[in-house]
Image: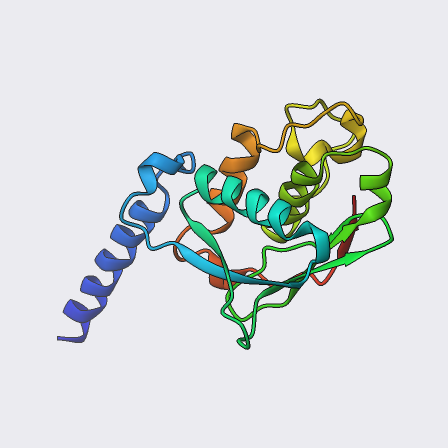
Length: 188
């Protein structure tokens, strides 16, 4: 009886190893994530000053681009996962991925706006940081996370397919719980 149990356990272990040893597959694209519940993170723009509309546009761009995470404005008086603050410095944000119940901040710095950078691009770029994307400098205008290195003339507020795919991967079901908020602030 013990021998039969040991043999059964060994057979189970070998079957488990065979399943785990299967080759890794690429992360699914946004369209393939249908049926996966989107993670919802909230933001508070009550301190965003003149940038409220640009922030809403930047958030809408991310919501159009990825499916595994939704960014929604928090109801007044409720706690938000990300707060948006207008200030006179350079734009910056907490590097995520920020999760529900997490704590991130986007600073919409007037310094870059005064130098001529696109406000909507800044908002989308800084929210990219809260979603877990680092800066990619230097970089072309086609890369949202190239930030200021793309120049003042760059007004592209859309993440490229690599950036969108990375966010999809960071917020895919089951993986989210293993990531810690970094607490790191990324300038630009």
